[in-house]
Amino acid sequence: MRSSHSVRGGASSTGAYSPLVDDADEGTAKVAAEASGGLLNGLRATTALLCADDMRRPLAMGIGIMLFQQFSGINAVIFYSGSILETAGMEDANLGGALIMAVQVLLTGVSMVLMDKAGRKVLLGLSATGMAASGLALAVFFVNGKKPTWLALMSLMTYIATFSLGMGPVPWLFMGEIFPANARALACSVATLANWSFSFLVTYYFNRVQALLKPQGCFVVFAGVCLGAAGFATCVMPETKGKTFEMIAREFRKADPPPKEGQERRSESSEF
Image 1 (tube, rainbow, N blue to C red):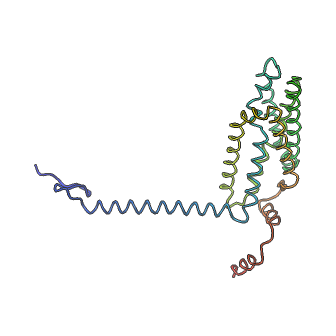
Image 2: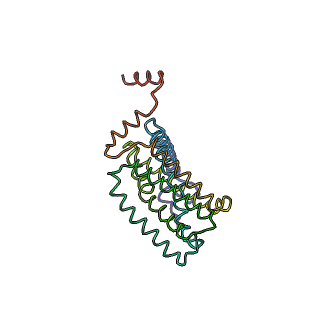
Image 3: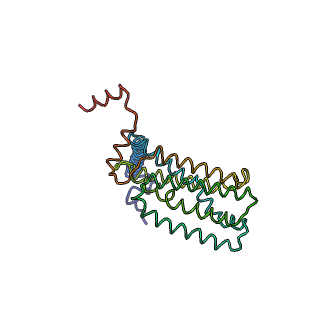
């Protein structure tokens, strides 16, 4: 029986290959090269967008506020609140944990009402200050031989309550307001990635740091971070309440240093 040839450039009965195979390989290589070039161009465009003059300060501020949120120790406090209450000698630590979470839900709802009345700066500043005081109270609890029990419960509840009022919701709202429209989605993604990276670091290393500094040392560090966040809210963070995106962008441009003489001339010449 006579052997047939391949329909699309496969091997013939003599073992030779059709030119169509070479054409297909060349086409595949061309597509791969175009895809690689497109990826590199996309990376260059993304980098240029994030490093633009009007993005540097908002992006640094967005990542900074996420750093303060996570290094305030909120996840460590939530994850280990049950063991803290057990250490304090509370008979039903699960009930105490449930009360703490109920406070968080309640105060998060309250913060939604206050956000556009009190303003972002005020809420974040008060929240960070309250968390710092609660962290210092927890440090006193451990220094005092893990007593009294009520101090541990009240400190944890106050810590979560003040976090829920400002440090919890404000960074996410603020992040969506400060970035230019052309880069908002990308910049919010970068800030979110930073937030979860900071959360991972705090959760992963908390036990090791606790073994090194003892619980009281950890809460003193958390309180220091919260005081830094209060200073950030007071001195660095712009108020965005009641402002349009264009007004916020103008404020960032005013806060940027003026361009050097050479840069100013280049920008003027580029306009013509």
